[in-house]
Length: 261
Picture 1 (cartoon, rainbow, N blue to C red):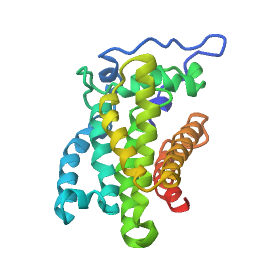
Picture 2 (picture 1 turned 120 degrees about the horizontal axis):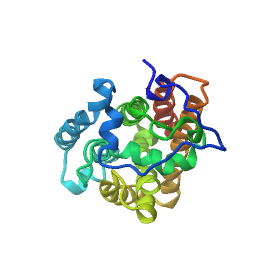
Picture 3 (picture 1 turned 180 degrees about the horizontal axis):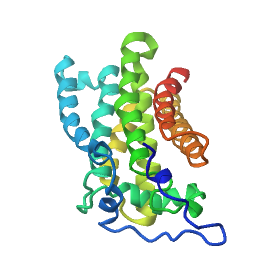
Picture 4 (picture 1 turned 135 degrees about the vertical axis):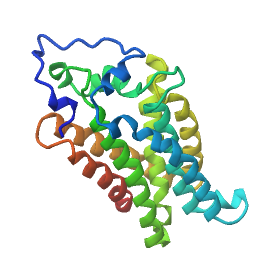
């Protein structure tokens, strides 16, 4: 079914009469999830389970000492998956304040309202992202996109063995631009604490192969967010495509951009 954004009637807002944008509270997330599909309200708990299981699988499937494993491009690439899964739990499960599903209301109120001016007309509660769109972005980009990228790394081998490092570039850009910078200027946001670790580990990993390679990884992160999130969400907001098209944008960007770079 259509997401919240398109299931509700158009609000009577306009540029001269913009939608109200009150600061989110601890109840904003639960209120947004009222009436959401079961999976849209609970997918992050799958991330909570998959995170330690995937980390254990990586450790058991790789050989050598810890130092040797961290020099293995396949190990480092796969590590981007459990790191981001843990990030999703703080973002969309419970954050460090104990707020449930806090990232979406906070994003729609702050960064989302700044980047997507259409929300002045559509209303900020579920714009630019609602629970359905949030599910599509997170499941498609991380569960599917990051994993497919690593499967391609194994299949293609050679210089493509480092494809997973580009997923770290995406993680770094998300951590820094989506969480740490807003934390500095606007205060804590859901996912910011885990972003410290994701950012530090990500920078460490991509910097091991020189500045040019690290720059390409970061470029990948910028392109991913610009195409998968910026272009994809804009196309949906403007009514040119259903929300399901965001799955194609996320999986395509997560896998094809690293191959091109």
